[in-house]
Image (cartoon, rainbow, N blue to C red; front, side, top):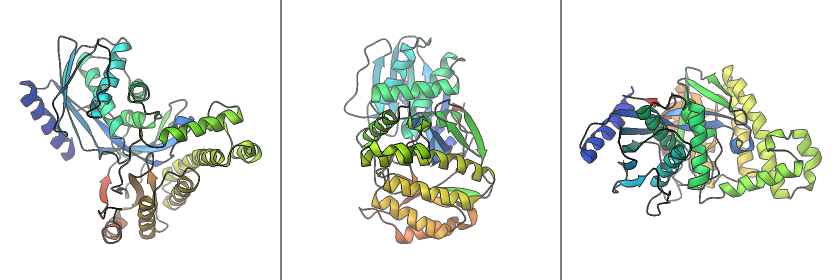
Length: 389
């Protein structure tokens, strides 16, 4: 257990005792993630290369004999949310976090899993609105809690990810792909994980031992449900329909060049990003496996340019962060926007020896539109959802 886990565990366990008057029976966790390359390819049945990170969500839980769920989020000054599993699920409008809880547990109940109510205390340290998947971390931690409390041995990590994705699509209202949930469920320490978002096949890719994962938060907040995320997905679906395929995963660069002329120019650019990004993921996996950070950095730069110019999901502050980091890193790694876009974070892969210089450059040269410095996180590729105690 890391120092981070210990801190979160104490917060969650103490909160359970204070709110519910008894000890939690279990402590579970699920990590956030950073995507190294492969943006907006997941819902196009394509490839992604994320890693789970050592920032996540911890849940202290205890089972109940009735069907009532009582849950409190320690990171918000709010009263516990309460609802029955067998009731009609209702959205909460005063806060966003209860809807993720209600959506996941409603789906688990409606799928016929033998569960009952629970007392839940949630805490975490995934930055909100940063593109590091705090929502998937919460969803997987909740599913891990109920799997542990009620012995749901047939609820394997991939099935957990599928349920979490459905809850976000059908209840929360964000048409996210499967990547965030699947890496939170199947992360592996010391490895990135190449995911085929059609077959859900995962392949761990070892990270070179002397390579740092640096995440720089632009302090520009983003929100997928309220952003143009769903619009981008609709444009991709329009492009796939034009080519007569299920998803853009099935379109080759040659097909795009030959038959893309009939698309509106904007939709063509969206499709070009996805088609080229899928190939970049496969090439990046091979480069990372070989420890070839030079090639990996070139692919990350191409990815960022494509997100900026074809998919149009970066913002000036993000572009500035990438430029600052790439200048320090040179040809020994790379930097790119990560996450859904419109703010959030940049991820950089670089030698440990260049970390201090990168941090100093960010402190000296970057300020958000509101004049704030970047928030910098040095992360480790970590394990997926599981039991802590």
